[in-house]
Image (cartoon, protein in one colour):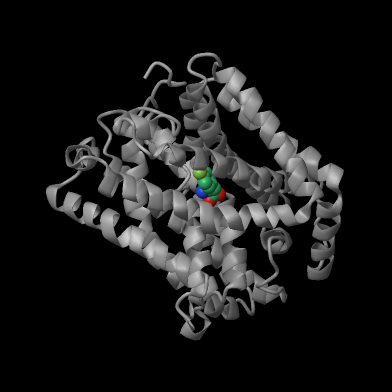
Length: 441
Ligand code: PFF
């Protein structure tokens, strides 16, 4: 335990906010709307919500419990619970997923910082839909500028992790979350009052089952894992810092609810605006960056609203990058067996991330490959591994004991949880993966 890089969070609320901070991020506000837009809106939404129910609770809880019970990072957690096991690879998979995600996630966080600076300079004022789209293409095409802006969040994240986890993450998250929610609710109300917004509401909430293809199912599952930060040990890492008297079960429910509410709110802001302003819902990764500035133009206090929103978006992204980088930092520190301290690991991780950011900028295809490879393959395999590890491989006393590490769990809940973990989760993940390979045609 003393190899562990930090002490625990100082309050239960702090841990909930930090875990929610990890979950709520660009995945909800940037990725969810564009993936939903590309995959038929309502059809995607319904599959996404089914995935959240099916995978969300068992997997968020499982990760918290593995962390809480082992007190280790993903490097040592699996060994700690079962000695001489063959599950060591899971820790390595988690760390690799973390690095690949960081490669593109920091880049998009850099876009957010770029937009924040431009919002402060009132650059979007008076631009119509076409001009906003052209603006994004121009900005994102400037590779040097994008690398430069990508470095800002790397430095900020490294600074937070350099010092102690609990103080940095806790303080930031406690203030941010409520403010972000409030701001998004105000934006949703404004957007719903726009002429022509109805078509967007229809698009987002009307389920057309003919649009549900294997690709939609795979992407919805991937988005669920990505958005809830599951399948790569971020929540194992945080679970290790969980105060022992905190209920992992209730914490999981709170984190999942918050994450889902923010994703839904993002959809309710983006799609009505897309239709009201004549954008294309399948615009791709630039969707929110072209739509949001148009939304702010319609709001009272346009300048202030957009600046405030982009500040919140940057911080929401940062609380996620902190959790992503913490997975790697905790892994490296623990794996070095005392040779490297936390600060060394932060430096090594940051250096690798900078290389990955450059790769994603210089070879644009790698952005897409990292994104799809992690969300649709590596995170599901990570989650599959964890569910089999806890559900089947741990000796019964430890398997159920994982849940016993939790104060709030009821007996019946334990039964349902173990059933989901042993059967529902692994079978569903396998079916979705095989289905996407076209096996069931
Ligand atoms: N859940 C984050 C988001 O929705 O933006 C992204 C993320 C963070 C994924 C941490 C995975 C992770 F471990």
